[in-house]
Image (cartoon, rainbow over all chains, first blue to last red):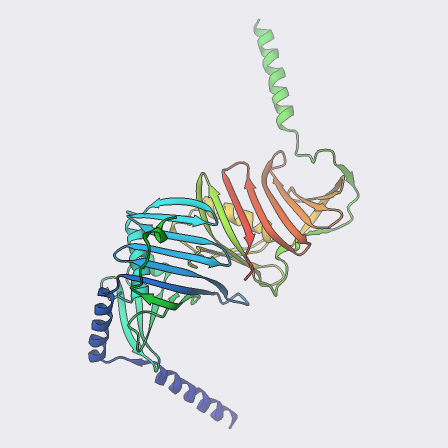
Length: 208
Length: 207
């Protein structure tokens, strides 16, 4: 009797789970991609706060860091941690400027890997990551979100990231949450808050 | 003339041998009876805590930063992870006194010499109990020499572990310096190598 009850509960919850996350239809996918691509074409700047949560199964508590992100089309980016320590990384003119608690350094970013990182960050925020060459992409929706799940095709990236989930609120065509899942199952979750699209951002924001 | 030359060579050879064979000694310290069988480094000993530090590594002039996370998962094993500031893992080790397991390491760091150096450093840093071989005293310090020639320096007043010096019997190889307000937690840690150009700094992150 007890086991039957348990099976029922498990069944109920698994139904509930699958009811929560549904696959999008082919038609829905076309429409969704169109919306995101159109919206990201119109993005000149993005200004947002973010919270980054690092989850590792062996830890008692997740590690939380937070900060601000500024993006100016086509390729100015400042990713800045303000809590619990100061760290900023600026992508500008094929260079990466790092300010690590006052220790400044510059890296030449002409390499392919930095190009990819830049594309990944900008794509993660705007949501325009429908690159079939780089990822196997599947599309889902819940009551609150559209979710795209990207599985990297390149072996070197696959070793570090098993899957990237992008969450789009139904009424907003930009990303509200990114989840980077490692092959171990540990993940990094980035939640964007107070996002402003196309606000005026001074170029001085992108100097170290 | 030749005889003189040989004699000179012999003397200088003997002299060099004598100097270089001089074993590592703690200056001005006096040997005392062992009061402990095991010396304890309590800075990573609490199984209920996640130890999280901002890390700066400087290796042959190249600087990199990240986050160091360590946790004692049972009596003998520590799990330790190094990530970038973005949170992606650079390496993930499980270390005990006699065992070592690589759960993950990025390709750029996957070299035997790097892994072995980091393994040895982190093993010393994380190991809670080490068997005492000799004990010394100097001013306000008690110094425990372990069987594998590491020297643990304690402040006699605060009882805090202030330094671990690893030697190759003759010279200092690596020095671990701890900055702590209590015996169980170090706010800042520095690892300095002397035979290679490697320096690692850890600063506590209050989460």
